Amino acid sequence: MRVLVTGASGMLGRATATGLLERGDEVTVLQRRPAGLPCAEVLGDVADPDVVARAVRGRDAVLHLAAKVDVTGPWAEYAHANVAGTRTVLDACRAAGVGRLVHVSSPSVAHAGTALTGVGAGPADPARARGRYSRSKAVAEQDALAADSPALAVLAVRPHLVWGPGDTQLVGRIVERARAGRLPVIGSGVALIDTTYVDNAAAALVAAVDACGPVHGEALVVSNGEPRPVAEVLDRLCRAAGVPGPRGRVPFGVAWVAGAAAEAVWAGTRRRSIPPLTRFLAEQLATAHWFDQRRTRAALGWRPEVGLDEGFARLRAWYLGGDAPSSA
Image 1: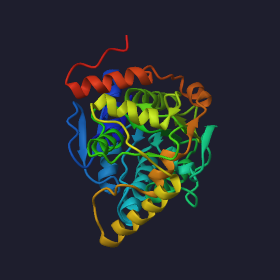
Image 2: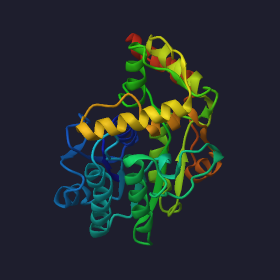
Image 3: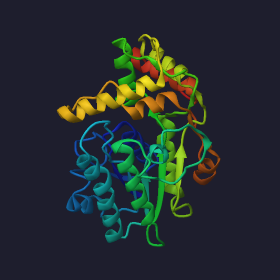
């Protein structure tokens, strides 16, 4: 299959493009900076119609991961990368006669800040989604699914809290704060959360490319399907990285107010760094969020192969500089 992958310089995009290459697909990647993969590459802005049209030409399927995922920044940046970028990809797919589009979204598009326990993929809701990233991704997912048609099958996939060796988003930030002694448990620490090891998320996206067509016009949440208490997840990630685990506890209400204050300061001073806390992060660390995986696994014909315990072992091996243990 001839597949375009946008956003292949990120951890998940790179792993997914590699998975497609390893099974023999003809892969083109599109992102701002070189990904260093052994395939055709188009460099540029995903919201640039000329760049995207060139990348999409001759493709059978598009796997759209490119997005602004930072927790800070003006709305215009999120709107450009996530909303305008998605619309540009949709226009290019329709113009080039691409038959399949797998749009990579986020469970946060349907998260209003309350606990999610064993639920499916609720509808994306920009009005209730928390933070600029989540709102922009909610708009983008709505646009993508609205474009589903007999000519262009669209499937939205929402990987949940993806992590693994080399992760600079989730793992990197947790480890940095733990090393500095600034990683408390927010709330009780017993709320169950699910996460997704990167190899499982990549395999699910590869499966989605194949399933898209017979399965279309809906959103699917992808996770390991192994909910654990949030305090345990934080502690295991820290132990894998060889840094101290969480220290102390902060009541959720206090954390939420502190997050709101930090957001206001960062916005007022236009800082580009990552604030120590946001309201969305406080909610994520204090409330349960795990999902029913039955529809996802049936629709994609996929199951996670790397369990959480093995994932933590692979992460530890990576930090030690050794070879990650095989799943065999």
